[in-house]
Length: 294
Image (cartoon, rainbow, N blue to C red):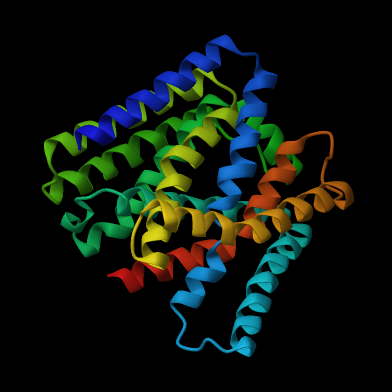
């Protein structure tokens, strides 16, 4: 637990300093670089996870899995094209659950969490995270939402949501008799994240969480699930296997940026739509992975 606390303090300290030293443009550059590198890689081995969990290894079955996966991605894009407002809300709700799930599953003592409260802890953690981001970047977030024809967020409403979700999350920890050090670690985490969201840009703030407290943890769990260990050779195999899908995703993003009708003067709507399209199937894969582990 001490290592987790030290890691969190180190990451937040570094990026809080960066937020004071660099302009908004450079912060966004760092953020986009992190998301489009490590962030994409962490979802590039979904097909390998499905293969690991599949009973059939035939070429036909692998082609069927690949086609279904790609089909879900395109369905997500179609969903965004015809129902942008509803699609973005669904994406946020799915991300809330997914981020909360990864965070809790990565904690060594997550087995102490009672089954009945597991989903509540996932959701409350994710709601706190997104509310903090929205609250301290409300003007930027509202501009993004406007691109998807969603009404402006209300500052007072967000404060109420943050307070309520924080109480619920703490209650799930207390009820399940978590160690005091873990509760302290969670409070410290959100305090530091809140401060980072105040001092940095939306992109940098989101990317710090997405990479260091989600993607890297997910990659670690994926490698262990696929290869049985987290040694260097397993990491190399994981990265090599992810390259074709990583490159395909980048090409797809470039094409999507050039041909989409979403406001191209603002790159954020493009990123949100792209991430949403590849997130929908990814969440299903990771959920099944954790279920099979248990």
